[in-house]
Image 1 (spheres, rainbow, N blue to C red):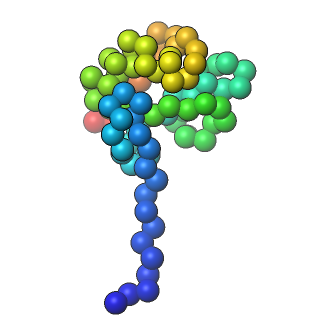
Image 2: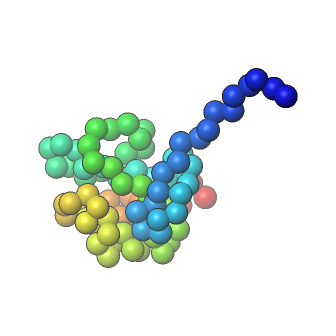
Length: 91
């Protein structure tokens, strides 16, 4: 028996499908304290964050309003374009 501790990977939930994923496999969208919404590639920006998986259905569900509800603000259309672009790059 080994005394080594295995370090668990951080898990986050997709706001659309409510499934748990490794944090590194999700995109984080953040609303900063001054109200600016952006895709947070570092995962460390301060503000209210939401995670989205790369599933097309989840991205479409976010575009229909669930992301705006979660972040309590209007989401600019460019954000959804950026999410789709980054999702394509992840594959």
